[in-house]
Amino acid sequence: MKYTKQLTFIILVFSINYLLDRITKFLAIKYLQGKYYSLLGELVVLTYVENEGAFLGAGSNFPPFVKLIIFIILPLLACIGGIIYCLIKEQDKFTIAYIVSIAAGGIANIQDRIFNDGKVTDFLNFGIGNLRTGVLNLADMSITFGAILLIVHEILKEVKQKPNND
Image (cartoon, rainbow, N blue to C red; front, side, top):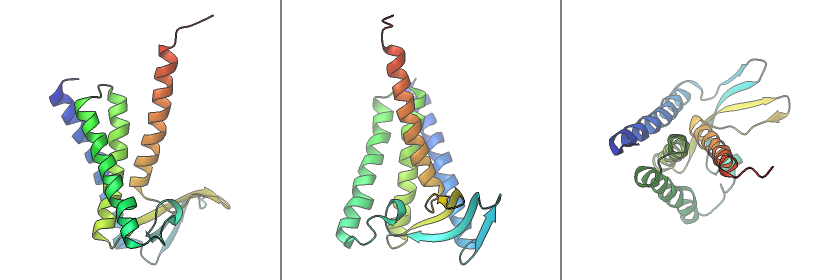
């Protein structure tokens, strides 16, 4: 992929993931605080939560300096590193899309932490009965689906490259 096309693609994928997260968090802050909406028989629940930790609140009791390192500095370095890797080394469009989606979600959540006293705005919960996800946001979905699709894509590339020994 030509560098200009690659840069444009990276900006597009990043912008879609990042802006969808920012818009939905803005709407959650404006319309969901103190409210609970159940959709499709509680398959989807909309509710406003501020998460001070990572997944399911893990690490919310860490000291502020540790939170700064674990929840802001290290993830930011990883996100920037992923984008730089996509700019200078990676040529596969799918791999680029998945890595940039992960980075965009990470940066959106890091922005929350920096400007919201270390808290991330979450508002989505999925599940059936008692089997439910934690409360999450679109950035979390960008990170999760980007990572899953990247792993599957890399496994499929390996399988295709293996010589057939029948």
